[in-house]
Image (tube, rainbow, N blue to C red; front, top):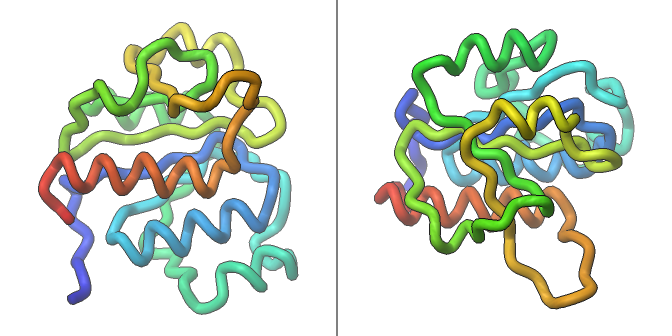
Length: 157
């Protein structure tokens, strides 16, 4: 059964992504699970990058991807919506959080996360609990975990 995207479904937002294969994998995840992807520019690669195209295959539907010129444009467009930042610096695990249908789940840049200024203005910050001494999961894996939990909690799957 295919799902039609509506405005009240969770969204994944990527802050200045810099690894094309990860972004392509997240596009595929969003396409398969019926979520919209939002990309905060600049990207660290071009959308015609062969590494990107190899992973995204035929899942790229630019109608389902919204691009923002900067974080300020992104943040201004979300005034009436919750932004949830996924970060290894958070203390609250995603398993204890109550997701809502229109949440935007924000992931930082693979190489550097998000700037401290963004940490300060985003109200909700969550982490994926991991074994001690483990630094982080791949962003595409993290996005799939969190999107699936959000969709489950909000009744979309």
